[in-house]
Image (tube, rainbow, N blue to C red; front, top):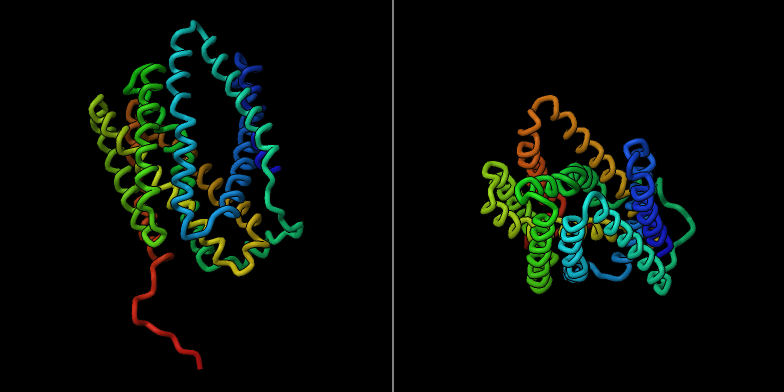
Length: 333
């Protein structure tokens, strides 16, 4: 919980930096990136630790989907309200109001978290032990987490927003689109929470990855309102099941270690290494593509290419988590 609170403070500082240096922000990009990176890492380490401690493997998918419902409900009003405020005020006034309000909510989140007690963590570090001798599943998940970072660093972070903004045309329309997508997410979470099963994570991940790829290619080829609506229906559902299934498999890989209770913090921290490397590689790849594609082609091409990584992750996940065939037995002398 202490780590999560530091994350809230980091996010608060990030938005304050944007407010203070708004006219010369490009001169403080390193400072902005540093605070935002620290905020993300600290916050998500705290969140992942809480989920790991509060759930069991069999019920974790349901828990994550319910968690998604609560997070999405909280985010339904925000995009629409932000779009209205930004479009109603002249110049940068609407942005200032949105950013100041965001700072207030981060402060409230920090104060609310003080009432929650976290589970104790051993003071001994198992960092190098986890690096050298992790569980079998975790060792094989490194490449998968690296690949996940490549997509999340580009596609999930800014490409979706850029594509939808380009087609929707304006902050208000983007806010309406995001609100509609969030409502679809809530309905998807409710259905997935009801029918989720830990035995079918890879299959569910595969459905999500193929769906997001096909919908991304469609909207890239035909960037019109109709394909945007189709994408708005498919994208929230697909990304929800991709993210939830991926996180559930990561948590299970940690629990496969006989000493996971003592090592769980080190596992969560080490998890950020392949993800972080993947995100940086994904952004580098996107920037490198600028040399080979015209600026008008860069967005649709990259929007179609990056989701392919999710599809390529499916066979890797299958071989990591495939179940032994029924009837096979092992004998020990």
